[in-house]
Image 1 (tube, rainbow, N blue to C red):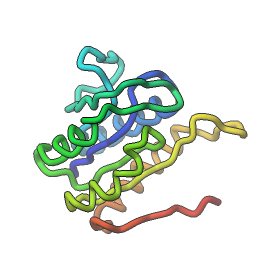
Image 2 (tube, rainbow, N blue to C red; image 1 turned 180 degrees about the horizontal axis):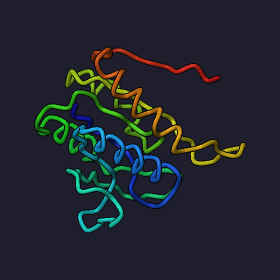
Image 3 (spheres, rainbow, N blue to C red; image 1 turned 180 degrees about the vertical axis):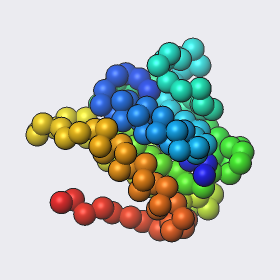
Length: 159
């Protein structure tokens, strides 16, 4: 299975760790992962697996929010069209930027299923095991990919 992962590599936060751990687990399960993220060409964190990366341009990036450039959506669309093989699904690790709101429309136009997980930058409670969540997310993504179709929406029970 080929997963186009839209996430963060910098600046460091829990979402960065989550993305790295789930990406590593997907690779360990013999899945192909393409990582799309806001970055300048020269940004290359050294603690990530060797996978295909697609940098998306931005004006400003912080732990809380990213402001994309005016051409960011075109870069994202072109990258998703050019990935080979075609991704089986797109996973967005939200919140990233205002592009989040365009993802359902972009993925529907490209006939790509979209799965999004929401990771607020600030928590009011102590976090549970992130590795446990990562393992669950890997299993869910793998199982869910066979069932989801472009245009489907999935909202997990907030229990």
